[in-house]
Image 1 (tube, rainbow, N blue to C red):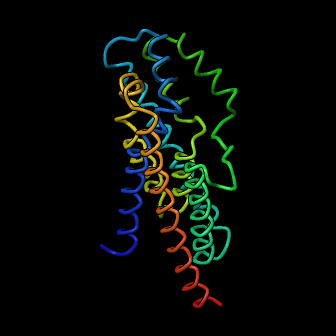
Image 2: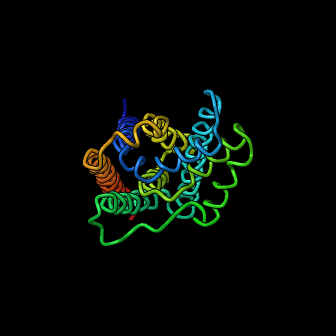
Image 3: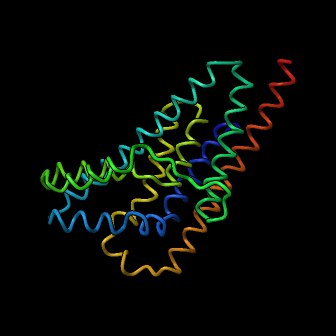
Length: 231
């Protein structure tokens, strides 16, 4: 396994852990939302749940793909090596800030989302009127676009992915990490205490920060090497 493959493997592992350990954050932000959605639609059986979470994971995958494509465009606009290194440095810094935001100690509060919040809320509310399967798919897709520092951190990380497929896979792996808590949100929401959720959120935030530091370190080393070769 070469250095790039090893780094990619670590990124996938960190993305999965972020999703898994971030269950407290997921439950706090979206647990009640998911529970209320299925109570309002009175969906029965497994199919609506599969449609909801399948659409949510699909949106995450598309976000990763778009982020990786954006990163590739940014790299192609300048000297390949130098810009790639700079992109990793900037991405690492932003991911660290998002991790600190999750801890509540960041000087910068994340107000960024993937779509206007008012529009997302309206679409989510209307999805309950679209039938159990179609409505669940729409609701899951909207849920995937909800403002979230963890998802944003993974999207920023995906801009440094070597290929669009790697970026898509990174966000999919992150989404799979969130699946246990989100799929059982209606059961866990009332049983996982505030203290437990806070500890899990801190662990997820520290994982995000570690991923940002790793990206920052790799970008700095790569930039210095390319700087010496080119200039």
